Amino acid sequence: MKLPDSLRDQLKIPLGQLIPESQANKSNIQKHLSENSYLITVGDRTTEKMISFGLIPSLQIIDNQEKRVKRKSAKSDNTYTELVCNNPAAEITPQSIDTIKKAFVLETPVRLTVTGE
Image (cartoon, rainbow, N blue to C red):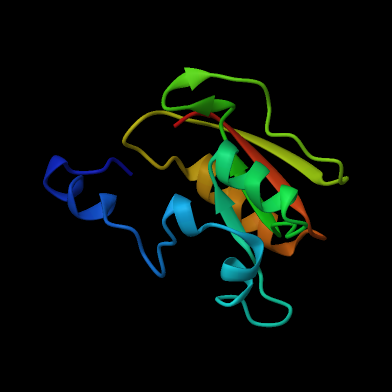
């Protein structure tokens, strides 16, 4: 599936509750989580921040980049199941969809490393 250019701006709008960086602390984040939430993080820095708060995401989607610059893998002291998929920019490949589906049935936490975007 290729993302049409006409939807790019619309899909940049965050879904759900966006917590500004200046307010992103453990207690403020916990206010938005119900008990036994299935927490999904997208992005290396977001994943690291949640882990540093002791909030281990059930599904961690990373690409070892920050603002399109290569970086070290998001740090974690926890063990997790690791999945990898390739995905080109502006697309969601069938392989990526299958890998995400697989992540939802595995024991958590699961870290999905995307090569590409």
